[in-house]
Image (tube, rainbow, N blue to C red):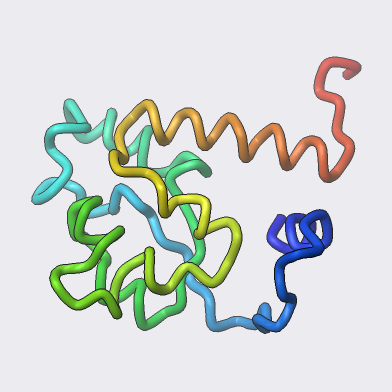
Length: 131
């Protein structure tokens, strides 16, 4: 998806190497209890949100381990050090699109899941209604 977006948006520099330095980040983390109780009603509800594609992005490994279970505000803006946050390290378009999200909740996760799913089906020209 990242390569498709870069090709489609020719203004973006393609200088960032897409290598194996990226790791999967669950925006609402797998260890959600400490900072995300206001979003999830219980364990089952939390798992339903955590494992949606809209709740995931790619981050450099070092950033991922730094912000792993933090609140959305801390993940997005940092804890006073702007070096370790999504806004300052969003090299990929798929992550950069998160920078204007002041709130990360169930609606945001479901909305992004829907958009990414539609984009996936468009890129690979999959028509789920003809099967």
